[in-house]
Image (cartoon, rainbow, N blue to C red; front, side):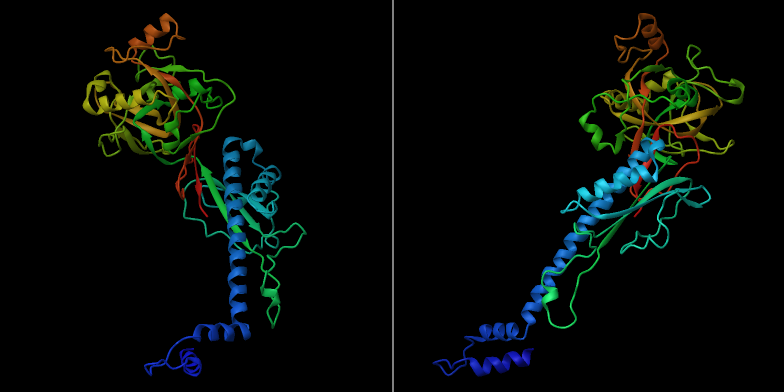
Length: 423
């Protein structure tokens, strides 16, 4: 190209008055040559047609992303509606709404993965022959524990029923005609019970959880969401009824409403402050990193739940964080079912079996720290709550967003479901 430029340049440029050659007309000559040979037209066609393909790809990916997330949310919230027939409608709606012409081809597959890693497709998933789309999702990440996922694949579909992105200029070029390309996209979202979580350092007994949720079957809806809730990474799934609050007393209080089935085997009741597994204190926001236990002999060492704990520096910070949450914010709290070394004044070992979303309405302290309670409580209930250092609130359901979730628990789901993209 450089030699061609020099030749044309030398032939067309007029001499300068000072005897040196000039470059006038060179660009015009080059444009004329490129246009005359079809090179310029081909370059324009290539740029425009590739741009159209990129636009189509972006629309298909947006549709797959939106559809997969909506389906995962629906399945996590209402498992009874998690069927291929119902969720294919969701997929088609969200995929088409993200297309400029409001139409695209979409296929989905709902998959359940056992703790052993064996995957089972739902009835109605595409066969291997029809699941042959232009684009597939990346391989699944290495995971532990049972979970579910949905995979959504979208591809080009036009209003006339054709399935290729027709070229704008490419078909006019000489040679073998270019008739278009079928574009595609894929998205995958997984959900399941969290095995590990960043939790608020307030442990509540499973006995109290079962009492307040009727064995994990009745969860309360949220009231007006605090604007800060959107920044927590925890998104509430709205219930159908107004919140029905109840009190949870400090651990092992004799006036607690909960009746453990067998106190002698370590089953206890109430709430307690917790430490990290390595006995380090919660952070400045009263958060700990905790994991659920599935083994009957697997205990984690935590701090004791005690009245005296409210006066400690770390616990005081937790009390302040607890008070700051009383605006409808959801706290992800550990649920424990058994305890060793049962005493309210010495460190004990609490077995964590899962995590539950809890909304604090009010709390009461034996020492009068924020000793007010909601007016809807009776005088007797307020007196008992104050005497028992109780926490007043309700359990709800939430989705916990997590990028590439890969640790899921085989234990009971206490209302918290981790959800995230895996492809």
